[in-house]
Length: 353
Ligand code: 1HN
Image 1 (spheres, helix red, strand yellow):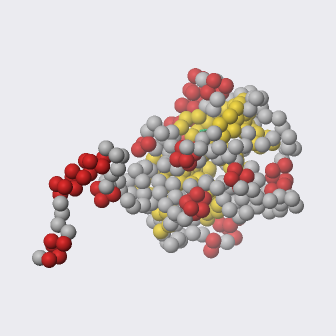
Image 2 (cartoon, protein in one colour; image 1 turned 135 degrees about the vertical axis):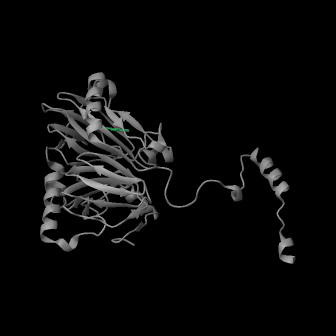
């Protein structure tokens, strides 16, 4: 009796109170309706390359690189239509550049990565150096670095762009400017990023910076090296296999051992033929792109079959498991770098926590 009358609910008075404070842009926390818990409204979604490739070709016939600035088909999460985001924290698009075209030089505060899907002969110029792009290469464009692209070959080149633009939107800190020249002046010799930073050695004077300068000084991680290492690992070090992720390595900033960007992590994993991974989830929002081979991803919503270059987004805290009937090299990028730096990242699964 006593306990029940200590704090009797005053339903009508509370409703009046809520209505009254609403005019002052206040709301009672005890009436909060948004879900609190891991995961987001984003859903897993697949973009098959076989569907995308002809559309890229059509886009190339409809709009020039110059008119478009960047000829990109943006992959939008079905739950985020109109946002241009593939998850709450990431942007992903497919970009096509035809022989002879140039994508004019600009820079912006968001960081960008490229994962090359098809074609050779294109380059991305970053901070005064032209980085040649080959299928499977992972290319780093630090925030606020001048960058332009060109295709010097004789066939179209396609790559996936990954950016942290949602972070810039979250903070209201999106800055952007065009370079006065379409192609920025080349100030560093061809190959210098690989020569100086690509052999587990560093120039004597190099010290990692802050902000955009915290990005990896190694601007390209060539596919031939990455795939050779993963295949050798599977051949010679079978104990390195992870029960949920196969043989999985992360791209490291060679100067710090950290991720290539303050916000984004990137990975390549080998799922050996016959692999059946255990069920796994983590808070990271991840975008996968099949570099070679094919695989299956089991999700609560069903099984997705992935062929070469298909793109799959797996939002945070979605359980999934990976299977492969043939050797499959699977690239991915995610917001794990930001989540770990800020203390949010968690995982659950046979290989993790
Ligand atoms: C950008 O600068 C590129 O430079 C690609 O190729 C995609 C998406 C949003 C904002 C800037 C590029 C982009 C982008």
